[in-house]
Length: 292
Image (cartoon, rainbow, N blue to C red; front, side, top):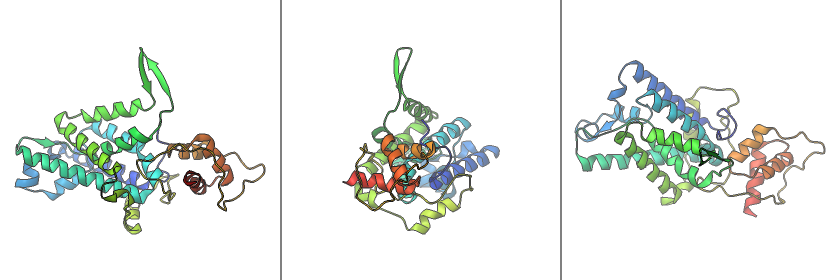
């Protein structure tokens, strides 16, 4: 279970976030300043340090945290592919802002100079576990020593490892992230309808390194984070291309990409045949089928 085809195809925002996290983490790790990262009551209310707030949004404080955090961010790129880079940017800003607000309130209530919160994009990662729990279907089940597992279990185990990596310092931002993801799912303030100006959303993709197979152009589905229904095969009445006789079988990467968005595998394959292997057109075909 890897969140769809490998690479950052149709996930430029995720690529930018991961690159930022890796660079900040390595830089402060090499400088031996990782332990100075994280937020405390003093950093926010007594001697505010803006640079520390910004850096602590991206940089992890240890190698295990960087490994598990980057892995989860990479997997959750499936949501950017599902809703598009623009709305995913809104999701990132919303989850980060709500998490930071909740963490600040908690530190203000504690008023304990020794209390601190670990560094890293915990808000985004754990907010993503909300749609992961509700919307990503289980495709494989198996048993190990009498215990039942699924392909989703590995993601939960990685999340648990990250949540407990710094004990209380990491549990607090993890819980705040889950709350932020839940608020986004309930569509508070109609947040799921919000969109950023296109030039702002595209700015993140320009800040990241180019990679083979990546594309900043994304499908424009009307689906939103928090809804990934099952799609049955239905005839579509829109004027999409008719499938060619003897057309080439759709590639597994294209089928996997649509499946990772929540579409049924057979419906995805049929839509790709009708769309002549154009993933964007196939996505629109499937979404049109949903609305009928």
